[in-house]
Structures are given as C-alpha cells and as structure tokens.
Length: 148
Image (cartoon, rainbow, N blue to C red; front, side, top):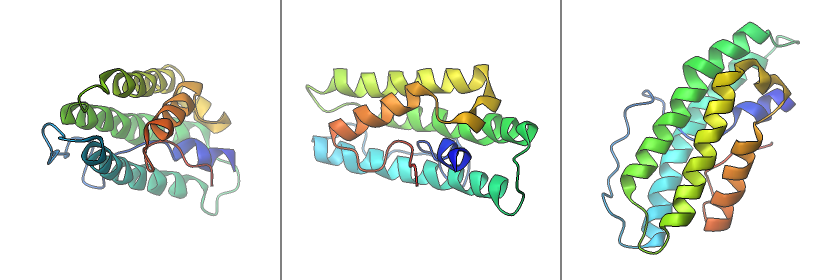
C-alpha cells in the first residue's frame, strides 16, 4: 500500500523526537558513524511505522485529515530529530560533503511534507527518496524509507 510506504521514512524514537543523545561526538571512522546513524534511524523508523500502522489497520480508506495530523505531529518531528542527531555526530573526516548532501535532501523532504502533509497519501516526497538513495550509497543500511 502506498500510504504505508509513505510513512516508513527515516528515523526517530519511541520516547519523543528530542530524546536523542548521540554517544559518539566525533566518529573516529565511517564504520562508527554509520553504526550510530543507523541506530538513530531505526529508532525513528519504529515511531513512524507505528503511526502508519495505526492509520491503515482495519479502516479501509485513510482519512486525509488523520494523515495530516500524523505527518505534522509524528513524521516531521521524527525526521527533524533524526537530522539534528546525525548532524551532531559530525561527519567522518573527508566525508563531510556526502553526509551534508544526505541531510540536505532529508531537510528538503521535511519541507515538502510541511508544505503539503496530506500528499503523503500519494507517496514519499522525491527528496526523501533521494536522501534514502544517497544514504544507501554512503553505506547506511537503515536510513531511508522502506517500501515493504
């Protein structure tokens, strides 16, 4: 279902969007950076998936007003928290451009959702799909939307 895929984007946590305390201040290596970034993304994804499941479980058609509520109250804050937490990690030496491009694409996706939260019914914003592709190319196994 497109709606389910639309809500399984990026990262956050179960305790709230501002509860991340990155353990690694400046990753010594790309491996450490990816491990911590993927941990952050798994936490957000869990929160977003739970909200999406509540929208689609046993209801038939999804109410656009409810999609807007979930997008603005859960998806956007989770993605914003993810960006802040990953940015706080600091990019590995020499990888600053790649990490900045991933975060910038995620921020453009957040802006697209903020402009039209109900558009998530039709799918994930292109900028978030780009962020997922960039993250995967960089080596992330968890950051990005999941289509299944």
